Image (cartoon, rainbow, N blue to C red; front, side, top):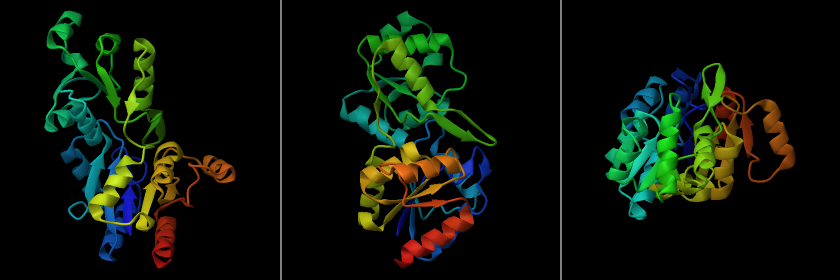
Length: 274
């Protein structure tokens, strides 16, 4: 099987590993499964992903890593957009630059005159906990001037240790309200990341399992891609939310639900046997 594994809320919360999940993934790879990490995260760099994954005892060298930021960069390039204003954390700027774009943070633009002189062709939003009103103004100004608005995700919350904090979606909503421009969102719940992982692994969709903690992104993306899904209750979704989703059905109804790594291990063994 190909296990498409979300990171935040499944493998770790902030910098704290979810107990047992990393070791379980290592066991599954040894048993012949493949792993692809797929994430909507918009503020980490490639090296930071690797460090967090390996610190959890999870396999990295034998796995693939597909990010919504990478897909966002590809969409900008396809649209012929090179100069991208980033209303987000430094990691997002670095990743877009690594993908060949001329990305600059709103914090590094002096004023509206400097913005106009540079000529931003696109705007990207990421999780940005220290954003200022001036940065929001600059991003809105670029959008009102015609810049293309593409963002990795619209996640409402982010699972920090012990709490849920506002996610990228809060910044996206603020910028949409300030500019009157609707964002194009490329990460989950769209099917692209899962479909790409299956294609790169040369794996049929009936052998793919999405493991995630969000009904609205991970499980919905699995439904859009036509693959099985396991909802982890270690991140943003509560048991009550999971029960409501099961009762309602639809695209956010998971195939199975796991409370922890031990239950996840049993479910994966059952799915592999079937």
